[in-house]
Each structure stands twice: as C-alpha cells, then as structure tokens.
Length: 234
Image 1 (cartoon, rainbow, N blue to C red):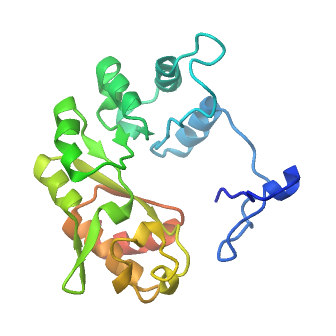
Image 2 (cartoon, rainbow, N blue to C red; image 1 turned 120 degrees about the vertical axis):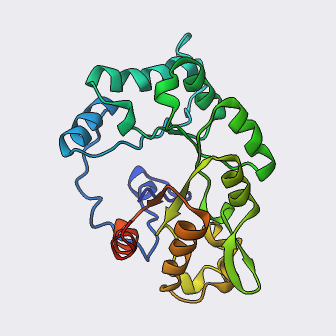
Image 3 (tube, rainbow, N blue to C red; image 1 turned 30 degrees about the horizontal axis):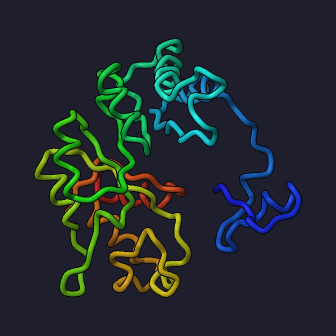
C-alpha cells in the first residue's frame, strides 16, 4: 500500500508512514515497471487489466505540447501495440475529460471504461447520455443505513435504474472495522454506525453483491472477496 510521512525531513523518512495495521512485508524489493512492461507481465499471466490513467502531477500540456489528450491516447496505444483485446481491459480515470476522450476517439476501448466518480446521483443521467457504461465510486457512495440495516444508497439505485454498471472501491483499505465509526473512516462513512466487528465486512460485501449488484469490487487484499465469491458461486 502506498504511504508517506508528510512531516518527513529526509527522503528515507518520507517513504515511511505505513499504518500500523498494515504490513511492509511485500514492499521491500519492488521493481518499477513502465506501462508497456506491466502489460507484458499481466498478459503473460493471462489476467485482465484494470489500469488507471493517473492525474498528472505536472502542469499540462507538459514540456510544451504533451497534452492530456495525447496522454490518454498513448495509454490506449500501449495496448494496441501489445495486441491486447480491449475486452480484457477495464480502464479507469478520475478525470471525466479522459473518459470523454476515449468515448469520442476510442469507443471500443471506452466500452469498459470506469469513471472513478465523486459526483452525486443527479449526475448519473448525464454520464449515461454521454455513453458511459460503468461508474466506479467509493463504497460509501453505494451504501447507507435504514432501520439499522445496510441498504443500497440513492446513488446505487439511480445507477441501476439507468442501466449503468457499478464497480465499487475499495475493500480492505480501512483500519480494523471496530474502529471505523470512531475514526470516521471515509469508506464506511455513510454506514459506519452499524459496523461493529471485522466480520461485518461480509455483510458489506453481501449487500454490494446481491442488493447493489456490483459487477466487480476492487480490494487491496483479495482473500476476503475471493472467499465470499467462492462461497456464493460467483
């Protein structure tokens, strides 16, 4: 898991800051890959792709003429060069302009594009009208509480009525669930009042799967979601 120490005074301490309930066991010897190298690794494993076009941390256009649209197109071109079937790719972006670019210029690539949405239920109709097929908000956008029970939110119900596919994020990114209400963890913010123990995670996944009807779920640790999916025959 990415982490940093905002109060660091050296590069070494800046790379610290991992939450105590996480582990650094798997972050000791990572190798930085280019996007093209990553594609080759994932393809060799026979997996699907869920790449995110990151928001640039420099002003765009970069270096004079490298625009955001060129960045979005290069992202697509890397998969074309590698010969990857677009049906295996679930591209993501927080920038709606990226999604629009793909819809307008690479419609086959855009069929499974995920808009990482922080909007409201009222915005969903306009996404649908633009040709968006999938929205991907954080899970607190998808769930709420009614009569002491976790239920689908207005956002989730509206997306389903419009025929938008829903992919939520992210499971297993929060502290021990007994603490999420007291620390006001953002992923559980709309329903944390009924979360009391770690086992409640399965209730959350169950409501997302069977009532919200998510197509997929992002998870930082795949064990829990895989266990649920295997038990439920998904």
